Length: 82
Length: 145
Image (cartoon, rainbow over all chains, first blue to last red; front, side, top):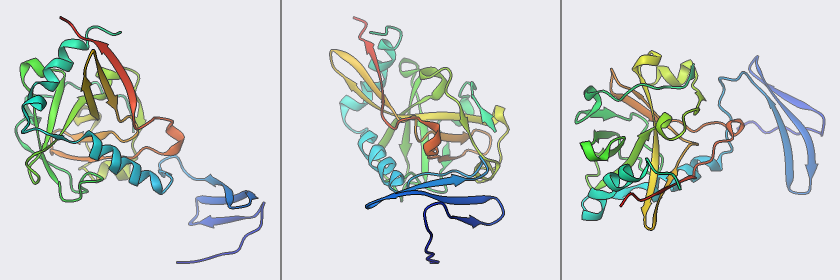
């Protein structure tokens, strides 16, 4: 891993088309600006963990009888918004 | 590819193995799934894991729940599922459904499943922070008696 020291207002360039700016530092918090082509997907690293948790809470044990009628009940109701 | 996919899931994607070469976050060993749907369940469907047999996700095509749902998928990401054309592409949302007095559907708009219906390859994409979609958006419906 490459580690660089930068001051507020300075930036780092990654390849030809990505630039990271150190905008502000406030105690433990660093604000970073990122200039990148729009096809480069930028997410906070902890988000992958959040999505994994979200998937785990969405996963259903389909063996259970309740699970088998869940979608038909939902389907019956969707025509009728609250 | 700017994509607001309004494809109708065709018979070709049901009851056949769909490959998730990258797995599904939280389920690293689940790389093969089967979509099932009964007439009564439409427009919802089950995405059932072949590798972890008891595990399934309730899913729906994104446009059914969010008609203006629109995501940007890069060519690189599409290449990972065999570069589908917009017509070959379906976008599914993973749902958490609670049936009580009302039906509450929490949809993960943040991480849609993009499916290449022809090649039967899919992956869950995590949208960037700039897209402002939440991973738990509530849709509430009344129950028809």
